[in-house]
Length: 447
Image (cartoon, rainbow, N blue to C red; front, top):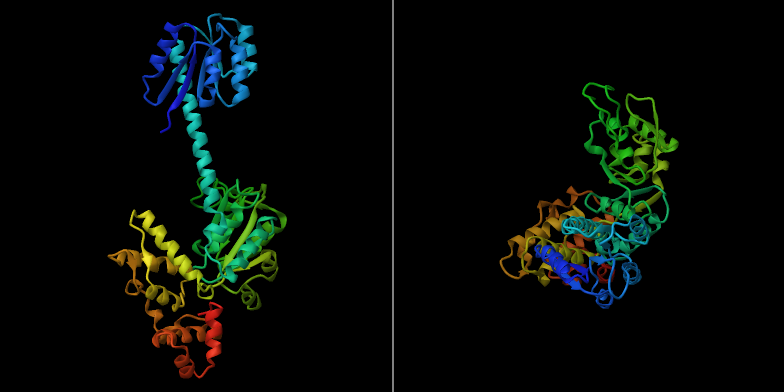
């Protein structure tokens, strides 16, 4: 811990030494004693955390010294210690910026002790707040958190930047594990609403009969078990952002109530009559095709268009080319740091194995695979034998994961490239396709 530097400016050497001895009893305090104002000002560059200043000095008045200190650093607390109990002088000094004013007596040392304790607590609080702000900034600086250099992910960065500039609703779509909540947080914490709450709600995890109460709150006695008033998620997010994940799982009755709240910008708690104005930014996410659900009558068309706003479709990991290796390295480094393990490299065969897999679980699955690999290795390197996939990795199980025809084609080509040691000519012949097709897909990081 950094020492708490204290300046005592006192021409009465006996009294000054008494104060220095008393304050030095705390080993965290670094106490300096000066006889004149000039000596103090020569050393003010050392940035004391507190100055105890005698009002009557041989070379300067306490007010002159304090003004000179404040000119150098206005944040330094200055306590004036005077031999005279002069109320008008005390008032003037406090108006000029003195932290406190004491009459010189036996209690000064204890008063200074209490002031030091208070100042230290305030400094610690400021330090913690500054640290938290810095950490939030680091945590949600999306170009650092959302890893990748592929064209697909760069397009996502562009859309996130656009989303942070306004309050437009955002609808995030993508397969499970692609990072929808991470994108929602990135938008919130880089927007003007960052200092207000981010409230995430997994719609699919709330029973149908409780969802209205969870979202909009309820009044005491509104139903059996409602023993107190409850503030819902929308009110909790006041001024900030509410993130509704798996919005496609919401039943039609609740959809109509949500639509009314979004249109009117106000809600009524269950069992209540009072209208509560709300000011929230809405971000929704789903891995379903809501347009299809609208056509099939499972999702309200008017709500669909209300939620659509700025659509952001997250790409599957298998479409992100070399981002796979970048993310794999990041997850390994993060796991090793968190578990105080030596850094691990990823061998070339392991990298090839990663690039040939289709990752049905996307980024979330990749993290799990790399963390397991870091545990399994006994050396300084992760090899291909440490990369363990599920049964869906086998070519016979490709159909277990629903994909487009283009995705199936890629999976098949990846499998044959792995099987025949990346011999493009042989694979082209086996699959009866042009070798230029395979080379093009490799060049575009599609395999």
